[in-house]
Length: 56
View (cartoon, rainbow, N blue to C red):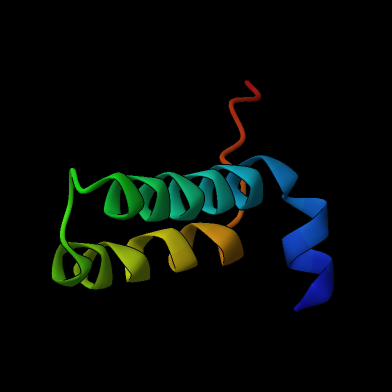
């Protein structure tokens, strides 16, 4: 599990940034906590998903 998170760093960083951005929006009042809770599973899934490969 740890290898998947660190080896596929692009989607991991994207998921973490989206989590942080969502918390920031809740903090400044642009989003509600219930909206953030619905959004969180998508971000958590991005942390563990493999990076897409575009090799031909």
